[in-house]
Image (tube, rainbow, N blue to C red):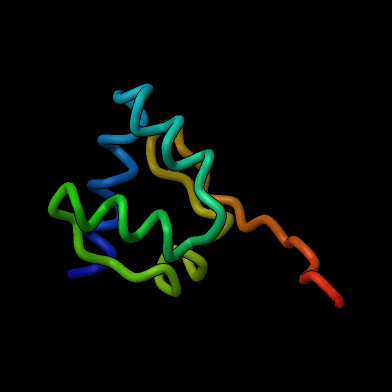
Length: 71
C-alpha cells in the first residue's frame, strides 16, 4: 500500500512545480514524507529512502549522502 502511495505522490509531484520545489528544498526523507502526508499520501521517510534509484514517470528518487556535523 505505501509503495502505491509513494508512486502516486511522485506522479503528482512531476506535474506540480510548487510541490516539486518544496520537496527539493526538504532536508530529509522524513520531511518529504510529512509534505506527502499533508496531501493525503501515506509513506515513511524510510520507505522513500528504500525507493532510491527507482524512477516513476519523469521523477527519479535519489538519496543524497550528506555527512553529519561534528562539534
